[in-house]
Image 1 (tube, rainbow, N blue to C red):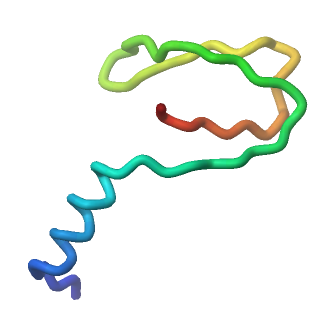
Image 2 (cartoon, rainbow, N blue to C red):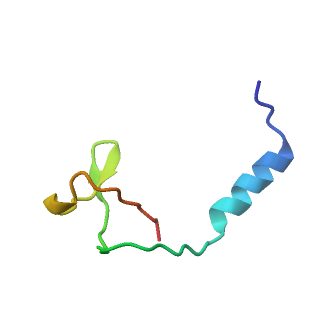
Image 3 (tube, rainbow, N blue to C red):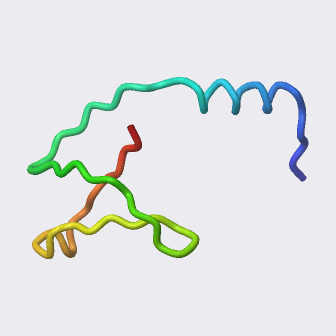
Length: 59
């Protein structure tokens, strides 16, 4: 059973406000803006990327 306490709430609020640094190695990078799609967001990537592993970082 999950217990909601002040310590967990403080950690979550601090985590949301802080920026973190990521170092990522890859073959290619594309910068895009997420567009609305129903109750979610969507970005389109090149068809050559189908079947590859990608990572998304919110800036």
